[in-house]
Length: 162
Image 1 (cartoon, rainbow, N blue to C red):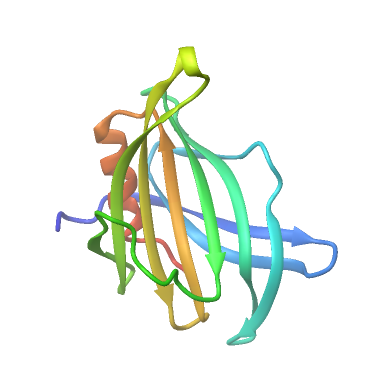
Image 2 (tube, rainbow, N blue to C red):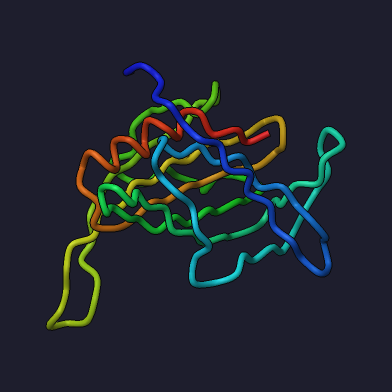
């Protein structure tokens, strides 16, 4: 594994009328990358308390990450669940996220209308956090060059999930 890169931590909190303010995680992005809200508001359907902190345990949130100087961008989907799926997706490789065993998978899909289809790259990193009893999945997707996805992957090793 390569040396850690310089990252900026972004506190991801959700506000919900029913559940109040909830912490999802502290997202690590490479220096120079920025974070913006996605097209849809976050969805939270369950929470629990661990270590005196209220955590979203079933949630989805959407963001856009981008590097203005390079003009790179990717969509980010954060999925939180109480437990991992029954089986790992094909092609998932071992990985580490801040000391937790994780998996990483890079794959491509064709997206768009039939006459305007294009290939989109997906970087999916998933792990279980025993401190918060949650399964966490980060999925970056977009037309970023490989070096952009590599930087996002390296930064994810420093995500703080609790």
